[in-house]
Length: 392
Image: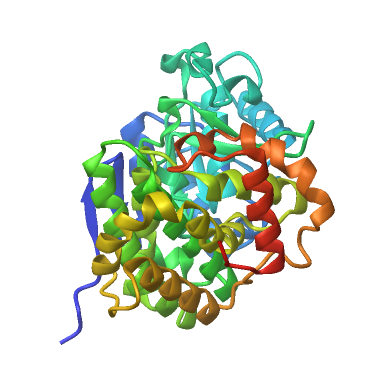
């Protein structure tokens, strides 16, 4: 007897609807939110796919006047957001539909925030109480439809946007940016190339890992982080090796959402490094996280080693010299299996380290790293990542 396909609907952390074919529910989702004139935010690659044309036709048949904006780069920048906001205002959009990977979802959430609120996107950088500049009642309702399983941006309250002044990635935040409805359809991820499957999946794992290691009392986030990492461990290689494995794809979508939910507890040095490196070099965010994770593990070892015991049990790892070594060796083996790079060699040069260190220190993710970091320590981690040296 064939296994029952994974399918579910629940309301945490937002209305989340998982299952094959659920993109067909988009017109009903728009009606539920009172959206009649949506701006559909995507990227050029996704907008050229057959399902996208079918989705536009469904919206039109339902009487929804949709306009598409797809001028988004792999690392969305201020200019992309400004152009999308201008398109929303010109269309007199009353809601936003974001379809794609983290880039499209992040831009879509910024459109929802800014279409009827004052200021530019960087005015809402996640510092202090910048988010209070927006009138929450004017944030447009939005629907998110992920086509990758990594960032979890579909359930997040923040976006990552590149600042043209220093090319660094800045975190934009408002609680009202969180999409009201998520349609997580694993069939939309079947065509995701293996290397993007690998990189985005490692992003989901890094979210869970940093949330698990972040200091502070948050047992709900801890539990979600552990289960999300377990789902990655059981499903990422399967999805990488067989892109049409329906259960693996569905479980990876769930793991991505769980990682983004868990990191409300905090992130850490992995993301503080990945944001500026990605901004300066164009390196895929998930690939950057996969490179940095073991080097940050080694740096943080004195303060996270005890937490590796439970993670090792969750991942059902065989006994090794220590739980820390077991988790580290397991991660390195998975990274090799899915073909992601092991170092920054050829991506970042030692001469770039002095420019990167201040950006890392300024990244809000660093605030919840379990071990405080000096400029010298950050430079040391970067140097080790360039050399591929996992010694302490």
